Length: 378
Image (tube, rainbow, N blue to C red; front, side, top):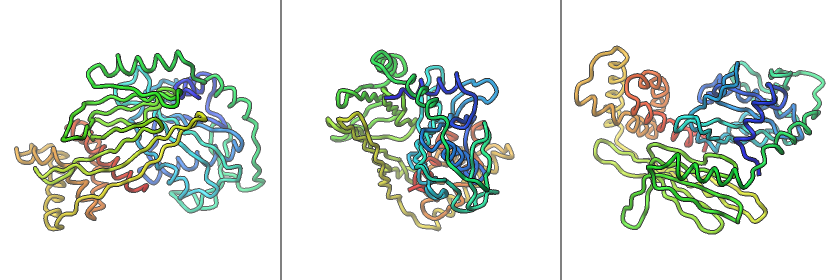
């Protein structure tokens, strides 16, 4: 079982960017250009390593390898993006790796790419890259290759050695559990469960009971053995259940107009552990968004746009507008699921402005965009 934090450290310590490893300060697959560049690198790494894993480490400064982290990226559907745009797509996972020195909510992203042994190529045009393009790694650069396409693997032994040095052990597992329970989450209700005598899942959050159901907010869930953060949210509430073989979460999102708020189930995730030392994660979107009268939403939508314009122009808001601002991301999300698709672009554009103006509203906008991303990939 590989400790992903050790794996990241070994990649950074012993290897410059090469034909099986790339590093990024961040990725932006919400934009067409960022999506195209990400697909290019995935394609190139898969073709350059047909028999072993390749990696992209995200949240690292390019010059000095400083680990600065990125926001938790909750996207188990990233494989769908690769399947949609690549022929002979590799198997790809995105994992959030916590590091002790990073602020709460910041992690290092680790993309693991495994070729299917066939030449990977773009299926269709995206940004400035044409459908049919094939990419390979030339040192640290992903380059197109138009002729003499042949898959060869010269990195198998090197990658095997790096992964061997990142193997987990009892000390690392125990240290991880103690750190999670006693240091990082002193102010939260925390717990752990051992599955199949091998896997340790820790979780923490504010706990409250409604009738016979227990809900958690400010939730952090980690698979300690691999140092992988499975879930993190400052806002949404979830339920947690488990038995001897599986660990299940249902994420809820609170939505509504003005005071008419209601919790809606968003996504169900089941982690199933096997006796042979493996596990699977099954995610299902179960969101059924609320529907509202279009005239009412037009009014709310226009009000939100007007508020953002006033903020951009540094015009003071009225007390009522301040109240509307607190609900801006939720009402924009409701508008989006009711057919106002441009609401997503407006929230994307508003992020840098709101980050300076009102940090809690900025955080809630990010949460709404995360939900939209889940819906899109499903």
